[in-house]
Structure formats: structure tokens, C-alpha cells
Image 1 (cartoon, rainbow, N blue to C red):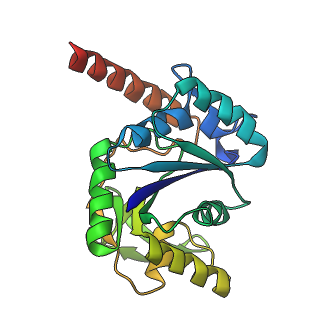
Image 2: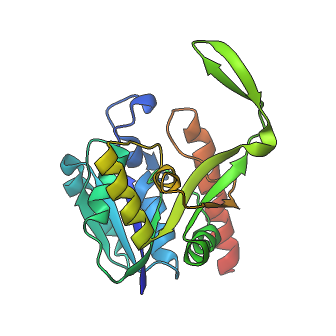
Length: 235
């Protein structure tokens, strides 16, 4: 039984501005999504990778992937108009051999391989698992600029990816959401609707999602640190 990674990359990056989709922005001369793919291709816990992106970006991505000469197959799939539809199109291409499906944002290139392994193992054991980090800020519930209440921080986590699930569970969750016309913010929210518990594992502050211009300086710092760490490991 295998583990399939679905990497949605069909966004246009409105908050980033400019004409280049955020997943194609360059970090050290390499597109962001390539840095992300490297983590999953290198992971011994992952057998196959699907990159789901806009149809008009597939040829461009194929050139970047070919240049990498990955040792593990990376399959390109045309995404949809929303995150949920994009992941659903990836799920439609899965086979019965897939035991666990892990979904990860293409613009989170700093996920650690150990976190990938941990979330997959937790999904095998519990059925569903995500990464999350505690909120350091006070969280307010609001409506039309008025505060309705304060949510205790100890009851709040900021969800990250990867999110991993037993394949049958995730397929059922997507089928139910489609039947009900429900659109969730992430894959976990679809599974939660089934009443199935979702385990939260500690994520990392470094596992940032690159969505706005102010994220880029920090991303470049992290890339430099990863390069320095690799050099030390090779010595």
C-alpha cells in the first residue's frame, strides 16, 4: 500500500501582486513549488507525487520539473477553480493502491521531512492528522467589526499542511462535501463534517505559507539557512 502526496498549486496569488503566480516566484533561482516538491520526492514515506495546477501553467511547470530529474515520479494534473476542486481532481486520479493521501500547499517549501513522516504515520494510526501551531496572539470572534467574544488561546491552533488521511476517509469526505454543496477552507474541515476526529501534531513556525510580498525576505533567509545546513552535512 502506498502514500500519495497531492500538491495543489493552482492559485493565482492575488495577495502577492504582480503577474507571476506565487508558486512560480523564484527563490535562489528556483520556483517555490520546486523547493516544495524536493521535500516530498526526498521523503522515504511518500511513493508518488501529484502536482495540481492551472492548465495554462502545466507546460511551464513541466520544464522546471524535467530540469530537476527527480528520482520519484511527479505527475501533473490540471486543477480547478478552487482549492477544493483542485484537490478533488487529484483524488479522482488515485488508485486503490493508495493507503494514505497527504495534501500540502505548494507554497510551503520549508516543511521538514520529519513532519511529513509524522503526519503520515498519525494518519495510518488515527485516520486523519494535520500540523498546527499554537496562536501567540489573542483571538477575537467578530461580526461586522464588533467583538462577540474572546476565544481562549489554549483552544486554538493555526492549521498548517501537510494534512494526511486514510484514502478511503478523504474520498468519502470529498464525496459528501460535493453532494452537500459544502466548500471548506482545508481538507481537514471536510473530514470534520463526517464526525471523524482529526489529530493535531505540532508544526513549525518555519513552515510558512508564502502568500504576500513580506513573506519573501523571510523565505530567502530560510533558503540560505537550509543551504548552509546541507553544506555542513556534506563536510
